[in-house]
Length: 131
Image 1 (cartoon, helix red, strand yellow):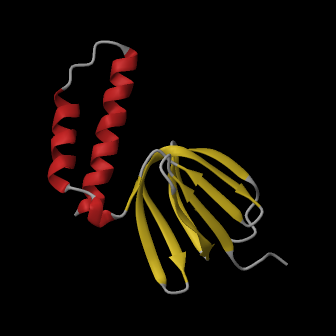
Image 2: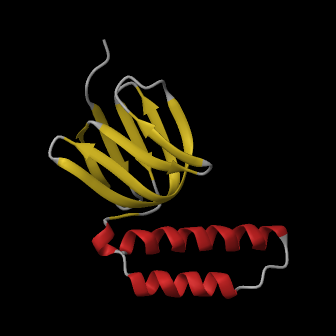
């Protein structure tokens, strides 16, 4: 029988933000959303940009995650991300400015177009979480 809890370890370059038991997780991979429940098969993936939804006994918590990697190994879910913010720490005005700047940028190469699309998606996700 699978353990009924997961251990979430959420790490940024500056510090470990979360290291506690949780019941379920949902977060963006670079190519779509994934949910994790206890007993899930092992997984290693590249993170996208957007909400990390953490379900705990006392309710739910949200974080904005900004890329990185995830590893699910047994009951431990390790999320290594460039940045993790609670929605109240996101400045909607700054996110709107970032979206406008990214949209106005002229892309001339494939790399420029990919960077522009990435920056637009990052700003859109931050803006949706700030509202």
